[in-house]
Length: 428
Image 1 (cartoon, helix red, strand yellow):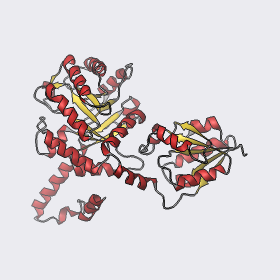
Image 2 (tube, helix red, strand yellow):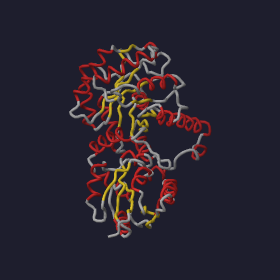
Image 3 (cartoon, one colour):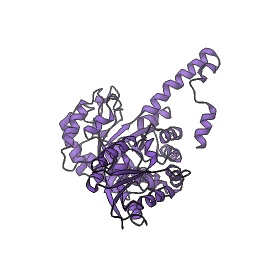
Image 4 (cartoon, rainbow, N blue to C red):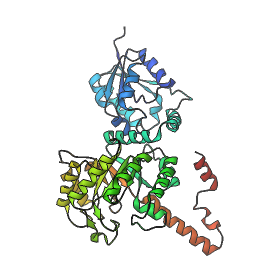
């Protein structure tokens, strides 16, 4: 038997003819060791796989051409390759042109040290994991899929990217938006933008029936997990019904803020007049919210308004500790400053918590801050909380004014999406 070690890195989410072809060819060179990528490794360069690591491991271990499997935690396989020092690395040749070009170069440089050889197998035409996944997603139980995806994101991705949506078309745009290997991981139904989309002020006016209809519209257009902005959660005796309703709809996360009384938007000039709940009372709200859900799948996040109403960093940190002890699955720290400095000060202290939970920010005012900086300070979820609606308003306003000015629509046609493109988008 050939004792040469053949390393084959794989995600193995959906096994098809192309994967079998690679493994079969790899077995010709020696003992096949599959470097099975973890969710964390995969999430660096593409969306999470449909199946978690445990399920994928069971599948790949049963494969005919596989001799052993090694857990691969780096998206460029560096540590696995270094520990194994394979004689051969076998990979599909599609990585010469996709977003793994740099990985290929790194692998070549690494195995050159011990005179290892790279074998590249031609891409199998007519087979697409992406297309297969699209078909499978349409046939999965949507609410279970969303909640499972959200939990895996929390456990595997360093920074979860979330975008605001407020109706079906915004959800469809969020679902389909891509730039290179990047996309949005989750959706956010904001109290502000939901109210604004209905032409109403942000005063907790939107009723449960409207919420249900909007969530259903969003879920008709996207399988991405949804985080819901529940404001203060309303009256304590009503909160358990709110949680049960949102859980039944398939919402993955709920944010409740520690405010009291008549709502004032945190970004309003009047925000300093907002009253903040006592720590004791809000902790009670958190416990009610957690106890109201039928499973641990739905996450309850506590939003702290201490920095908004000028109570300071110390108060925010005290509240964060108490809210986590009361069962909060994560903390959202909010600021209306144009600089992220007070957010980063909070992060530094927060990261030392023994029982640290995921941390959320919404950079509406400190929007010049890059995601890499949030990640550096330990932020786990960044929510672009109002950008889609805010970008739509000036565009609609310009269009309406130009039609009035020119008494026809030709002058605005070049700035609009064509009807054909709209029909194509909706058909997809």
